[in-house]
Length: 424
Image (cartoon, rainbow, N blue to C red; front, top):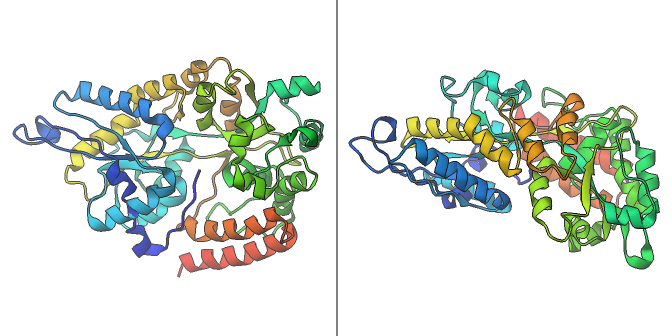
């Protein structure tokens, strides 16, 4: 769910306006909530409409602790979020607290747009080290971890039962995945075994790791796309399209892979833990689906792990209240609210089981188990500079106009040039 092109310092000033639509109004009483009973307005930026109800509950809970504070969450769609966010940063109208993801974090932190998190309010020990590392820059924490996500495979039990095919289970392999997808494909019905979408976080970032490769090295300075392992991870998906077990790239452009899954035209679909709540609320599929671990490649069944953080605008007019609010949104009470909603897996340690229990009809434990072998989401100082290249070249690979081998050679060279430019 992480795309959009940003260019250096000037571009970083463009990323914050979607969230001007994201308003968390707070009227304050005393101390950090304002002086002499003045009314203080905070803005809180977020992008996921499926979490509206949860954001409202969080707002109500914050108001309960701050009686003179009124909270009104407002959403901006993800496709517009970072473009508008940049605009509001440059115009001085950025939200006081807003959502941040890994690919964009370093760009904002390195350009002085985020205030360091007050660690007297947010204890790093309450979160996984991976998330703390993701949202730290030059030794300082700039993001209070909100949630994390891993990837698993959703499947339509009704389609499996009709075809007499066994459900996916722990220990299954790429070969099992391919064979199962073929058995569930029925051209006469316009039905496919799996959706091999051009999706990094949900699909090929995982399979590249499962093949023993990496998208980028741990330092964020070297591309991994020029390796045989990366090629194997990409060909898992392009081979499924070539075999007819998946809709074509054009079909998945005309109708999204998820919508094809919702409509029963696709039997399997890899998706993140963030999708569980939406699936449970969808009357067309809620009772038909369940979730299983990813299939294992040559090196295992690794899942990409990512997570969002609440960050504080460095130029907030109410820095103390903004810090308090960010800490609350990532704290224990907020974790309980998020877990019980089933919307996301809370980042706060010890609160993951409540999320699993919130939707007992699904085997959501597979998302938690995925932590054991999870690999970090690939990022660099200016991630979007090379993900735009990645998207452009891989779209040609998925369409079949460029071979995976040739496409990855081009991608490795152009991505490396973009990474080299980050250090200049």
